[in-house]
Image (cartoon, rainbow, N blue to C red):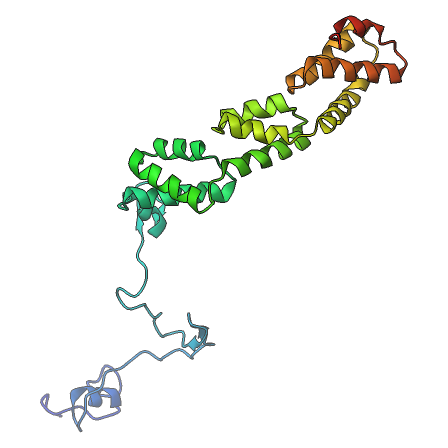
Length: 261
């Protein structure tokens, strides 16, 4: 019989104590030790890599080195806080004059403003009065603030778009901080003849909607519409009389409304 200390015969049968070829390798006999491994699966098609190339399926996904990517933090609401939200949380450390310049430039980019409108905006944002006055004066010197130009553009736009007369235009300019002299100069450029033509166009536009009403009701509505747009009473009634006369309705009911010439 074979001694138990003797190694079994290679290639023996299972259960007889005989070793197979892999057992010989694992025992270290004959040199290097090896371990039995499961058969490796056949490689499949290459999966696309993140940078446009390809990598084997078994290769782990590459990670960006630590600190190379932009980190974001998530608040309690679940929203990611990026650089813009962090900037909003940080207080503005610029000096008041720099802040005032930035505010004025941003407002003037949207539409022209008067000096008083900009001053009110700076006051609401807590800019000291000394810094605000310095910036506003500088903007006036370089032409970024021009109340006269603002008034002229306002008169032209509001008369053409809304049909406002000189009285209403001057009132709007003063409410926006334009001085009385500058406002009067701007509205004086509006030609009286042009003002009368605009009033007649407004009456013609509304005349059809008043048909079928009592004559006195038509008079009040048409004249009142012109009065709300700043037209003088004499001009308003004269335009209404002409419009009704052309329509075929007598204008005698308006004669006692007109001022004596």
